[in-house]
Image 1 (cartoon, rainbow, N blue to C red):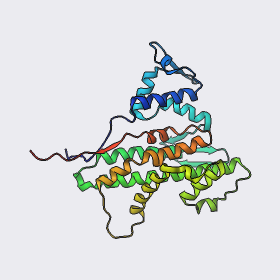
Image 2: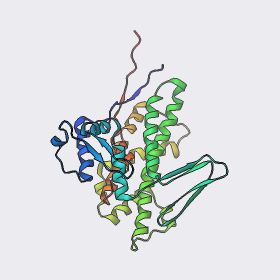
Image 3: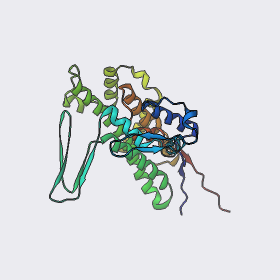
Image 4: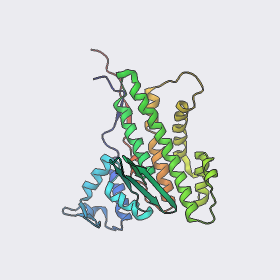
Length: 291
């Protein structure tokens, strides 16, 4: 097997950070118990759901977060409580179709075989995670780095698109919910990502400076994406160490940037926003010297 120059950590968070995130989830669900009481032998956590409750222990919950970056079912429940349910439908029929409507929007219908999704940002954030992992898995001389570059380019696209989609859709929702917000489709189409973020914070309260390091990291990701999308020279280059730096920018520049915006308007973040914010660190692996 060809040597891989980039490796992702086997876990997303330290035990302490995973336990802290587990406590935030439980407190958001209304659990007021202390961590020490939750860690007692026999203590069971129950997430009540209409069909079947989920039962686990605090240790199991923290372990899942440490490995995966989020507690999927618990956080999906919190997300639906604060921002509504999002759904996706698909069909393999060649004669039927599937449709989906959203409050304030007439909806979309797809002819089969096909799919419609109301989880636009979640889907793009999942792309970030998938292509990030693929960059590491293909970071070798196999196929002359062709697959690695392709995955890296797709990763950068997904990073920028997820932020663009999140703030664009939040502005659309604000325009639907608040009569004082007048944002026409034409104006929205002409907005840069930077303008969308500025208008969002103007409307919900806050200052541009509060974007801080998350904004700086996003800008670096966007610059790397633009080098591929808007080339100024006839030759493009790929450097594994630069790709590594970009793989470690999505935590702040995408996941945390989106998560902070969610929290500003009282919403629990998308599950995949937390997974990106807690994405396992990437590291450079030096090629062993021949014996």
